[in-house]
Length: 272
Length: 272
Image (spheres, each protein chain N blue to C red):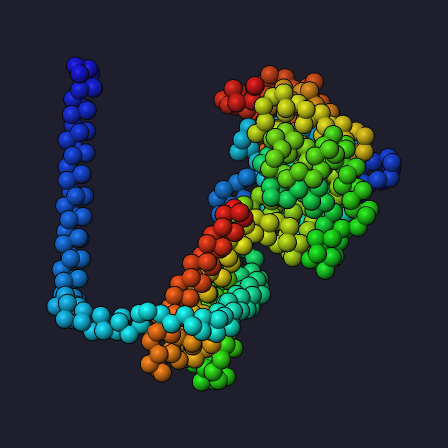
């Protein structure tokens, strides 16, 4: 058995496979405006290899903030975050390396619309390439092979050379997933990936996300506010309400009582 | 309308009417103020219809000396015309090369330090405020007569204009794709190349074409202070009292600018 201990003495990740969990949050807090606005309070959990975790909660619960703290698009004001056992909270030099291992999918897709689908997916390989090479927009043969493979995984290989803005919303999100996959990540963070899509397309996208997670053994932390999707796709649900973690368990254990705690009076927004 | 809202509606209409009248009164006052100021300044700058009427015979005399234009050595104007275009082209090219780094330094989101941002903006404002003609006058006394000071004069002014424009475009890019590249572990320069440049490119290329058009116009004028091209041919012919040739120069200038305008706007439309 392998036990990793954080600086506060808390045990993080007890695994028998001698591998630390992919990511560990220990007492992570985030406040804004010198402490007056509290976004997260003492959030702690681990995510293991290949796990598909859904973070459930209404808007404003802190789901986005928490996800962005993991790849440090936002800086936590308290607590620690460990990536594969290594602390990344206060390490500026290893930031690029850490981000290389974490892919991210956004609600607004965030593709570069004027570039081709292929270029967008290739940009997931940038962390592996030198600045000098990128000056000429050049990638290796291996990069191109990986990019095409990732596009095939989301069934969009045939649209590789179209401009990204010619694709529908669901297709663009799949390209975004392919871009994240091109990084060969250990973890994918998905921040409300289907909030802008209609339910049928949303399910398609979540199907792809779940599929690649299982096939490639990539851990996924997915923010959702729709309870139905959480029940359908999650192996494990973490409930967040007003910045606090109030539930951590299988979707089957989501009773009405617990859902009420998470959503309070905003239940309607969660049921589609 | 005999509804329960009748009283409130009447009240609202009365209030709205009084606001409208107040705004109207303020506008009339402001316009009257402007009119008075303009009237007072008219005499200071010796605006006089009488002088125009008295000057008509002089204008007719001058016009008579120019007409009919001397087309006999039209071909001798070919070299100055080409020179004018070359001055404009080189001035624009130098401006494009110089503006690229300056624009990056002068944009909030790409500038490495606020002090650098501030100093660069100051520098660019300096470049912009000085007219090409003044640059040309100074440069002619420094490097001598000919097209070279013309090129530098255009380059200096155009750099200021172009860099500021590109910096504004850079500051207005959609941050989503930029964030996505950050999350993927891309470096600073890579983010600029893949996230920012594709977004600003169409507008910037359009502006460069516009600047080239403006530069051709400027290049014709710069010749008047000795900086080569058609303007030089024009002032030379005037100094030698060969007004028929002056007329030809003017016609060629008009044709050149008309052609440049047409080509420039055609290309700009194709880009956008």
